[in-house]
Length: 423
Image (cartoon, rainbow, N blue to C red; front, side):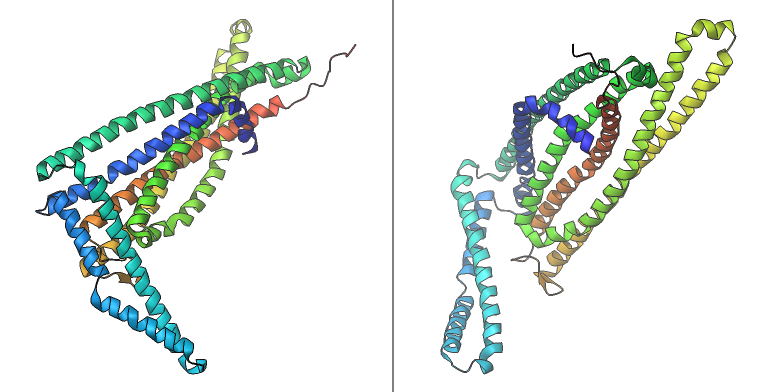
């Protein structure tokens, strides 16, 4: 990736546009996750006979009752007294096991109380800041939520357009500077070097190779920034719902990374061969039409057709290999991602159906999981997986751009064998 990273220095003069595009991408990611958050209240409106105000009040009351549970508070007091007695007892050898179990139980109860207090605070904040703007009628609340989602989508579209426009501007200005610098360096080389390289080869590197580099820059500044931010925003909300179930989702991530690394190596080699075959095809075309009088004079048209056909077939075969690699990457990653979502969804479904909070002795949720919560978690995991799936094509495009950058800088860095007379 060394030569592709060298390309990025040509984008440095336009860093403020890049920073603005990153800001727009952040807003897109935030609005993306915010719109998905509307799923939960919509499900609550449709699945219960309460309006949103009544539902929030009932949730506050429910969590407050659990927080003020007398049995829980009594047990906490008993554990504090027990630990104090153990601390005052000089014979530590007999009370070590009792102290350890009491400490573990105390920590568990304190953690549960902390979780409950957090949920009470969240719903009280929603009641104070949000609910006063929401109508009490259920249908009006539903329409209000739809309007909120629509307004969020419109605002997200404005930021997406601005992001794409800024990325396109930086990419085109970078290619403009790169082509001019490359042309200047090529002119400084001596005649023998330029003749050895050949005009078709130079044309291929000035046109097709720089366009491949531009495609790589566009996905780096565009999709490589925007898609991970979307994934991170949705992943953060999924962790807030249940970080344990979200952790189950990321168990297959290392296997996905291994697949992408192997594919990237194959794609880089295939892209290099495709660019070389394109240069060979340019060479046949240039030689044929530059010497078209000789070709026609000696009736060499069939020979030139065979040469071009062979070069074109070779290019097609190498290009098809690139297509096969690129086409296989998406389904492989998609299968792994769906498998990860299915694993997390199966775990969540078990918790919903049984009403448990533990799986194999591991605590998965602080409270019994509701069906609406599980659906919202699934939506956020799917929204996390979709940008990850799209990044697979980004990775392959970067490898193609790296192969093109290697070819460009191979000539760019070549010093002229004949230097100018300093006098």
